[in-house]
Each structure stands twice: as C-alpha cells, then as structure tokens.
Length: 322
Image (tube, rainbow, N blue to C red; front, side):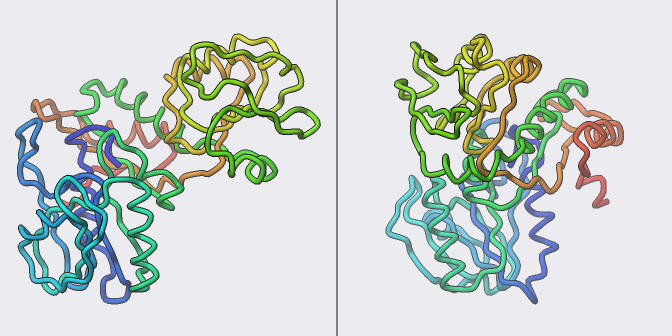
C-alpha cells in the first residue's frame, strides 16, 4: 500500500516479486488498481514496469491482458467485469512485462483469491494496493502488508515522519477482547454498545455520520462499537460526553478510521481507547526520498528517524539495491 503517488509502491512490488521462491512456491499476483504503466497519468513522471517471472499466476483485465509482453497460459475469464473488461487469470510461461488491473472491489478480490487457492493450491497472493483505497490492506482481505511512503507524501522530513507514524499507529491498533470479537463481528451496520453487565444494545442512530447522535442511557457503557467509518464529528461527540470518558471504542479494522490525529490524540488523552476486531500485520515500511518535483530528502536520516518512530525496519530499496 502506498500513502501517495510516487512513494515507491511499484518499486517495492518489483523488489518483492524478483525475490520470491517461484521454484518452490506457487505465487499469484494482482492489483486492485492499475500498475505497471510506464508513465504516471497524473504527474507524467516515469514509472517502473511490473515484470513477472515464469510460473507466476496473475489476474488482470482483458484490456491489459491483450497488451502483455510475455507468453502465458490462459486459465480463466471471470464473469465479473471492470471498467477495462473482465478479469483474466493466467500463468506466465516466460519472464515478461505486464500491466496489472485486477478485481476492482475488496469482495471481488477476496473471491478471486479464494478461487486461486482452491483451484491451484496457491501458497502466496501478492496484492498491489491502490492509492486512497485501503480496502485491500484490510485484514479481512490480506494477512499482512508493506507500506510505502516518501517525499511525495511530504517534502518536510518532520511532517513525513509524523504523518507516516500516524498511519502505522492505526495499523497497529490493539485487538479488543475475545468476547467483544465474538459479540460484535456479526454486526456489519449501525452503532452498538455493551454495558457493564455484558449486555449488547443498539443505538437509534444508524451511522456515525449522522448529525443528531444521542447517547442517553449509556452511563454504564464500557464498549462502543462503530460498524462503519469512525470520523471526527462522531469521535468529538463521544469525547465530550461525560459518560463515555473512558469508553473502549471498537472499529472493524484500521481501514475504518478516518478521524484526524488531533481528535484521536484528544480522545486517548481524555481516557478513551480505540481498538479493532481484526488486526493487520505490518511487515516493513519502504521510502522514496525523492518527490516528483525533484526535491530529495536525505535517505539515511529519513530511514533512521522513521524506523525509530515506528519500531520497524525502514528501507530505501533503490539505495539498498545498489
């Protein structure tokens, strides 16, 4: 997943694909967006192309399958369509370049992955995420993730570290209790709370986006569950309610949190905490210290500062590769 265009997501994907053990593992790769273009359609900058190795399975649109620069075995053409045609599944017979544009929604992606694992005993599926669409990084879809950030996200190193750390903090939100997971996971819509006796109650308000949200009768509330998006307005209302000062606020996973760092900080400072029903695993962070405008951050300083802030390895793959 990339936090912005030109943060090195495609370069990271290429790095991983080049090092996977295709001789001993069955690998499949697809994208929830479009990847492999030679030129960025927004910034008009050069982009690295996706190269698949012999034996790799892949899913892409009919349009981009016709443009492939490799020999392949056609396996399946899906009934589900995208803006670029149906999703074609194939196996690479030679090393070559491909444009990836696979299933366009998280539900379609999950179905494609499930079919690949059932029909072809796939060991590992690599998903190329799309900018501003974090659904493919949800633990409901993928087990783990790599995050790409860089100067295109912010040309100020302090701001870049701060903004990236916020995203990492969301990915690393704690799991709620096992009891809460069992009780709340089936609830896919609405607002709910669990009282001190463990009883589940529905709020009259349909979503956290509603203007009029009332919290009457919640003085015994211990857990408040938001099935949809967690936004600033709702979080502020919870924070200012005296009966909810120390409530545990539960969301499905980190991709549902759209509240600002400021609101989250104030909520936690007041005694509240945010947890998730399903937790993601962040493997590493990669950085591109160069922005499309040509501004370059010091790679060693950026990697060191960010690694110290998030407690994870941070790699500048172009520099490390050389």
